[in-house]
Length: 499
Image 1 (cartoon, rainbow, N blue to C red):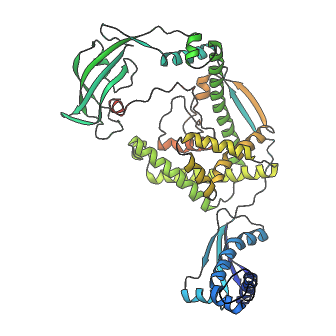
Image 2 (cartoon, helix red, strand yellow; image 1 turned 120 degrees about the horizontal axis):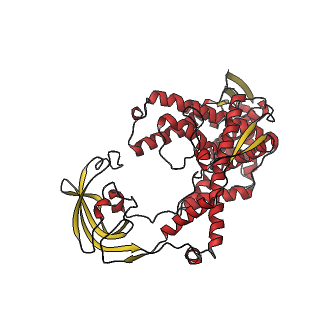
């Protein structure tokens, strides 16, 4: 086998491999001899089939298997011998000439193929003991715990039918039908819809006009959909809603006690407080972790400057760009709406992709040198977390990870990265700083690093999204920064249009 380097330009490599026809024929004969004792052909006793006959019958198919085996295994062996690692799966090119391919299968011509790839750049690891970070810590107050519990209690509050007029805080049960220019629109109707006045669940002006209604009232209200309303056919439009009030109910007293805890499946109100405090601390801790990690990565980014494999950068950029365009479509905005252009945005996200790839390579090298490993148990937990996100699709998810080459790497990579960060935190200078929750959750000045999550999540504007996307990508936990509220009951599709 002859191996010749035909291109060495930056990180790009191209290797020409030539296997002489006599070597191919020799390997073919070995396989034919092995098959001689295994095949059964009418007219011949076992093991007595002439090799020439076998070659005539099965030579091409065996040679085709040999060719496939060579292009599957030899590139990796060649790279290993050269002491190189390919950034992505090497590209293999062979002759497309049918006559030439026929000669190769008949061992009448040398087998030639070209391996094209980009190498993982080699770089020397810098000492990390000079790194330092400030770890912001929030002390959760009793007041904040009680505030969260009140919100939980509010979501579990019961209502009792009353005879009087609906007031702020009352629950109105109604049927409604929405129309634009006198024509009913999709999703604009509902029966037995429940709405707590003052909850601001529906579009502005809707709830205000229900104050004072009584059970049995029929009323028509007029509202205007916000200009930025997601449904383009309704955005900015004036609509009327024909409403029939079926029931008005007043809220029962808000009580925080063991009975409330019992309704939530918890043994006591004290235990409920412990759980809520733990959730708040965990979620603030997640933001602290993200900001500490960002400080580490920013410092590592300043320490390393080397060429990155363009194949990895291209793949990372496509992932970012796909998400950015999805966000724009969902928000109904354009790059111009965010004071930028598509060209400038592409350049910005390209830089972000390069940073991600470079830092990924650095963290990988640090972890490899430190002997960081991801256990099978950790992989199983990550897979279980994926299954939990897609209820009812467990089989499809399992099949994907079992049958898709490299899919398991998407589970392993974030775990590995977090373990490398843990390793670094055990070696560098960490200074704890007590801050308020507002300081912890505050965005940094535009142009600098932006916190991974905000207290109230919004769609990231393209001009800021690079920093946010980077921070979010660097924090595999992906938890909300602010303590989570109890999820509101799922609304009917009709209510979504009125909201």
